[in-house]
Image 1 (cartoon, one colour):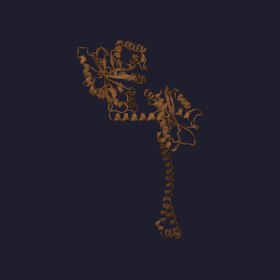
Image 2 (spheres, helix red, strand yellow):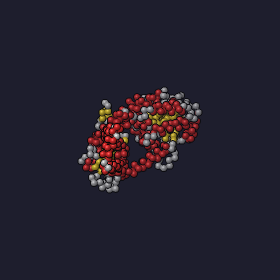
Image 3 (cartoon, one colour):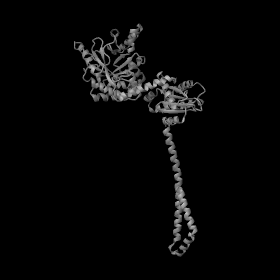
Length: 524
């Protein structure tokens, strides 16, 4: 519009000048006033005008180049907003727009498959080899996904989560489950990560638009539900969506949300279960267990709560909070009593765990010799390399280390001997099986003999009957824990339990404890 106005104005001025012979008038005026040297002035203005024209032309060219650069920058910005810069795959934002434009039901190209892919063991690569190795693994994974589905759309949703949206015409000419299993085998091949050969597995969930009313969002949810079932079955599994999976996953999501709320509102509190000397009946320690007193609906197991906390990324702050409360509650207890605190797999993988616990002990003034850190056999198996660094640091602080659930089938004697364990707690199933069959007693006894060979004190957990107590004591277990003595109770109730048990100690028995002070358990 501005150009039209300028052109129209210039044309009108030209018409007026032509109509009145403006050029001849100017020439006559210059001749009449030659001493004014107006010709030189007009020539100077002409050159100035020409210079201005050249300058304007150059600015116009520069503006064109700038617009091109700006357009490229905007295109680059748009690309980065919709793609993962590491793998160059479309990201979750692109998926959101992609799903709006893709009409799943009655699709003209026919059947659509959605494959949710999740790597098994990616976090371990990151922890052991570093983020550079993890990034390279993701790049190789992206290349392998593109290689397997070259005509389909492959997304990286974040972390080690990938998604494939494929039309039947774009996929290998085979059954989709077979194709997915072939992809698992490809992803399972070793990857050279800066001189280290690493193998990671993968789990895949598959969903398809079998329903005429299906939307892509529904397929994504269904694929995630199938992926959850595949991962629950173990490494390198493929699961095809079934209707029952959706309801189960919805229930699980609701339970996870409940746990999140409970964590954020500090509704999860420590409960305490005594550990006793089987011979004297004296209390030698107390184990911290997580409970949710206000939960009146469907009960949550401790394993489920901890599992959700790990998935939500809240396990570290929650565990630190729980340890602080437990220490505060235990300060009025007899000083010879040990406080046992469990570390989950996610905590054990934290390379700064020793520093965190040391900071809490320093902050609370709690004696390190009273704290017993329990590590499950399964967690040790998952994070052995990190544990081999962290546990000696904790031991050097004066903290006692206990292996929990020994006999579950994960650890070997070599690992057991190398770790600085002060106490071994047998898996509760070992004791339960002794009541059911004779072979169970032999298995239980064999584990006890192994631990005795390592000269470690033994705690039998899950004691519920006098027969189990007598058997554990007969086979060589010095200490026991279970409902026969006391279930896990609140802080208010543990004082009464301790008072009752400590009355036995006042009768003249030698004082015992799990913290290595005046105790028959030789931990030092």
